[in-house]
Image 1: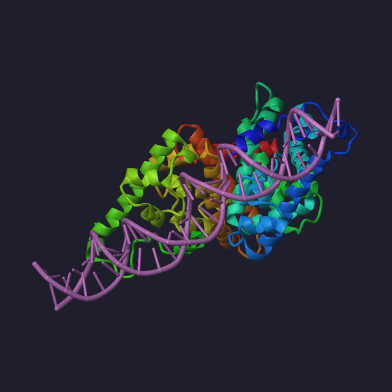
Image 2: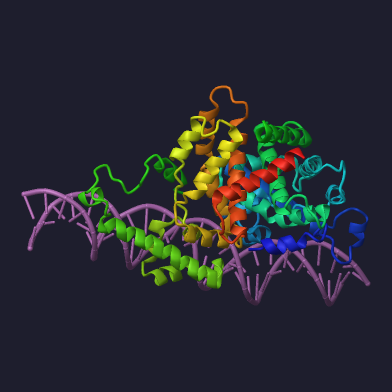
Length: 222
Length: 222
DNA sequence: TGGGCAATTTGCACGATCTGCAAAGTTGCA
DNA sequence: TGCAACTTTGCAGATCGTGCAAATTGCCCA
């Protein structure tokens, strides 16, 4: 159960940045150690996707994944808390971006809903794991209830940060309850995810967000 | 993974109704067998709640639960698919109620949003497991990410039924995409759950639903 | 009331998940 | 090169969850 720890780690922008960066890292090129770590992680996710697509989540054992990726089972669990996490490739999704700060500051338009839309679009446009991989993960998640649940729970984990963000923006006299606004933002994110996935990964995030918002508005006001 | 089977079972209103009801059942009193089954199930849930509240989800073993409830481990797994399910006490939540039928038929008001509100309120007012138990389960779920995931997964299971319900209502020319409407209904349910839990279980479901809807509307139209 | 029938419980064996620990292997850097 | 820090790996072990068959229990009818 590393979730809480991960959430705490988010305060650091890039986990690989040590207190004292090495020369290689300062030069922009990551050290061999870090490159290997990322490659292994990616290889594990890739192998997991491939096998699960072929055989289904329950028919694939961690052992098989590790064999395919060329690492030991123990190493697998150094990278992921569970088999499911390897499919989803969950990484703390930094909510500390320029877009987030701008939202908190009251921008970019000053209109809450429009700015929520911007925020969600920006977040979706900056996935922490590569569009390809994300698309496969979503595809699998929409077929395996357990994975979808994990994904939703993972989003719930970010709720705290989101509430904080909304509170920063709304200040001391919120016209709306921050938790409802945050919950709505997450729903918006999820719905857009699903629509984007249903569209076969085509189109840009902002367009999908806008379309979902339009739908909801007409649902709530017709 | 019994979920799909459970979903199929929903078509039968009450699982204990055999093809041929016994005399005792016809008389209103359940047979000893059925009474024992329910008592055991309740005892298991109660023991699980008590132990998990005291020691935390991960520190409680199924063995300990069974010892406390006086049944064998194997029996535990005859009742629940997993330890988590025992905490949540998940039971198929019948979506085949009068309220559901009325919604599908276009009632009670004829206005989609208002009727969604009615539907959600009705569903929440008719919990399949007793308010007390439901409150404890929610309380624990909001603390344990894994439980939250299970809970969300369980709700996802009902999505299919919900989509079907919405499709029945909207007919051949839906003004709104059924899946978005269904997703919104589930969001509404979840948000109301959370608000109800945050309020310490006080108040009536319809009031909470109405309050959430009011918030959302003002958020989307201000 | 007793016995057949069906549902339920239980013990047991087994495969899979996941963790802690310490040894062995790699990388970074002076 | 050589030390320090990090990572991988094997191994033992706790727990979870399932299939199977025997024992138990409730149900119903003669």
